[in-house]
Length: 314
Image (tube, rainbow, N blue to C red):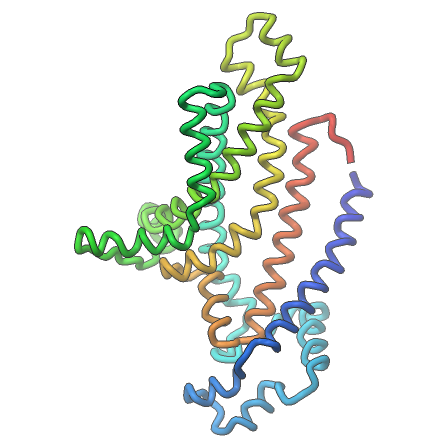
């Protein structure tokens, strides 16, 4: 186990390095110039040349990269926003609870819904409930979450002449009001991500139910519920957990659109606004932090396999 963890941590370093180089290069290749936008927007600098010099954009690209990545590695300094001049890490920490709450609620909705429908479809194979579950899985895969989110926001104003007011309240201030605001985005996002979980759960459980030890349990006269929930489900969850681990970047990346539509003050909205304004340090640093979180979460998911199935060895 120790050797496995060390090897995975060693692989994380070049992965994060490649992410930093790729994001840094892509930001410089985007059309437009942040200094020009800031001058046109009556930013703090009077001239374009003075602003470019103040931001360090007149220096070679490799120098800008080394200064940025060196500040992160040596000092833990992710830089400051070009537009607000505020520390990026402080802003990320302030907004991150909103994004993590949305991601956790989305995972909860997608996993609970997907597992429940997948179990029913597998246990009642080729029945009416199985066909309904499979159709629901296909629909969930087909509907884009951003389209569904727009419909949820727009249709009430058309049909009921009512527009919801998405005024965010933190969980620590008013937990009930916070859940009222967060549950709709989480349901919209979670339903669309439940489709793959349904399909994987159904196929994995069908495979486990055909194993010899399950046949032995049936032959001993055990009831259906303990056989499915106690003996079969645990092993069938391993592919589901793998799928959730692979979808973690989708949960976090999808928050950019969901938070923008529902105006949730999370990291996704912070990233979206920075991207539209070509705020290079914000986009680069947020990408790098999210990539590090995804790598760490995937490592935890890999370790959890051994707890679900003791036969797994690293």
